[in-house]
Image 1: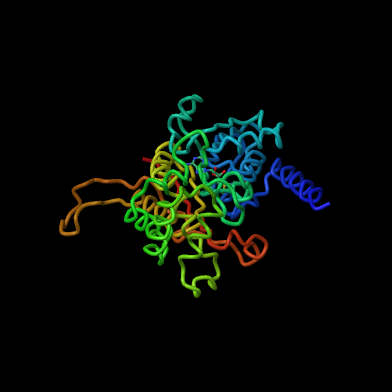
Image 2: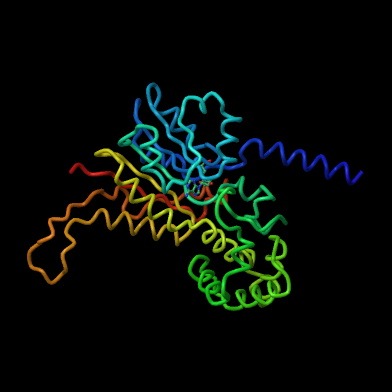
Length: 330
Ligand SMILES: C[S@@+](CC[C@H](N)C(=O)[O-])C[C@H]1O[C@@H](n2cnc3c(N)ncnc32)[C@H](O)[C@@H]1O
């Protein structure tokens, strides 16, 4: 009887994943920021569950072109299955958004009218137990968004030095117990390679003082975030993408980016501000000698955060922030 229940639960779970479980965050704000019109060419750099892509597609018809990218092949396959009508009308690309210039060139597109990116992983990643993104489900310690490329989290954890692991946890996870966790992981892996999310999660839980177990977030949250960012080299790809995106936008084209934690937002803010600067001469010079022109205008100076209502409906939205820029005519 128990076995039958488990089997039907598993079947139900698989059926759910045939459809995306992801609830888009800040979708109206990000897509309104793009100022879409009929006939535009628009890039959705992060297809995910397809929520943004569907909305963009509707808003630019007739005659518009959507290029939707995801580095996770399962996001592309799922969209083709769930939305075959839209999928055959748009350009779907399994690639990294840091390859934006090449993706456009391959599709004979020179400039685009608007670009949106909704960063990080989707709820589908968290729910798929075999992907290793979540400490809530036991599964292989993988964490790669593109399962055809790069090292898994298990391989990273097996090879990295204790000191580099500590720094990684501090830098990408803001983990205050980084030293303790890095040490516990290195002691455990010397006994046996850490292969599953469950093993890693218990090592972290056992390494932390009791008070750390009573925080709002699970003790393994920050370590999992840090490893995921490192495994997928997320910050490097994000920096390359932002610069390319500004470059390929047409005059008055819009770029909107939704981030989910301070590390991501800091990169978006820094790149946007650097490109919005005019003169870059040293302060000591009385007269500008650089003739440097800003490439973009910051549309909302501090970005935009979800309403209380959105957070109540979708708690994943609580740390999100959307920032947007407009390309200047030069
Ligand atoms: C938060 S989800 C996007 C959700 C989507 N806006 C929606 O409405 O369903 C982020 C997606 O971006 C993808 N992604 C993350 N980094 C990427 C990268 N460097 N290049 C391409 N896709 C990436 C992930 O695989 C994931 O599917």
